[in-house]
Image 1 (cartoon, rainbow, N blue to C red):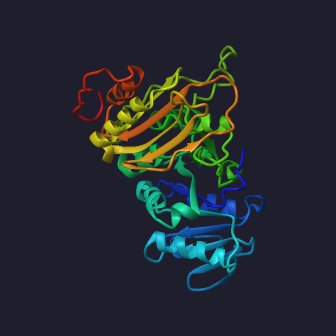
Image 2 (image 1 turned 180 degrees about the horizontal axis):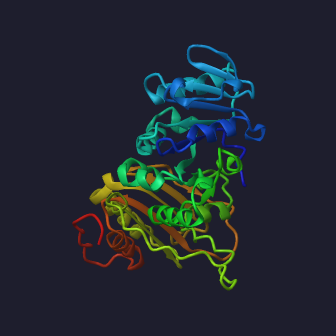
Image 3 (image 1 turned 60 degrees about the horizontal axis):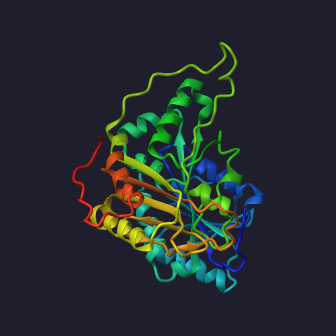
Length: 366
């Protein structure tokens, strides 16, 4: 993993997930792992967090000091104020931590938290989003997706999906659930962690939007993940059973995703016009848009990322090498069908015709 040691901003990981999926179990496993470094954890309430009491050494009104050296802070009021207070105390030498993990409630929408980090004057200069991690319960997850649209949004906005309780379901049920999650968010890798074990090393360094990012990391962050191959597929009689596709939930159908790869650099006016059109017409419905883009006349690409109408400053990938000059863009939105999103991306492929692109009305599945 490439790092820019001139970037002194604190990396922030957003840990979200379904009700009862095991966010706190995963968090406890991370805090107990010395290789994770010193972490400041922000939770909604200590009582709800259920952090392992064996890890707690001392407490004060707002800060819990773990034996591992990690810190835990309850959100008491505004998130930006809580974050700014932690960063200020760190800068004054009162606290020592290397990264922040924000654990949300089971029904939290990740969007407002991401936007807070993008627009707050202090936080944009002192922190950077390191990734959204969503914990999905393999046993109860399908029913949760059916019942709670917030859970669908959490899966759609993830940079990484951690599957919990995989030991409690059959291989066929697990394959079906993974396929459903990939349909909601085809660009997020999926890893399994039983009782929080096995995922700690995968939780950090997820975002490609960081200074000094390795080109391979930027490409991986903006690419659609291929489904994992069945290791038994080529062995006669041993391949995994092909389960019937489950009916599409109305909640799942509200999420649309589309991606595009362009072999040649894009004229800057074309890219700006496409993005302006997308945001002006459907900005409220954009859960995330991200990409690595080559513009005509530029030797290096840049990585960009946005939530609704709010975008992070683009980050150039200055250490790009080789002849690959393909642009890759992924859009995930609610109440927009996949064909509608793809028509929007086709504006880039067509290099924008001379006449205005006709706005597309309607929402939902095709």
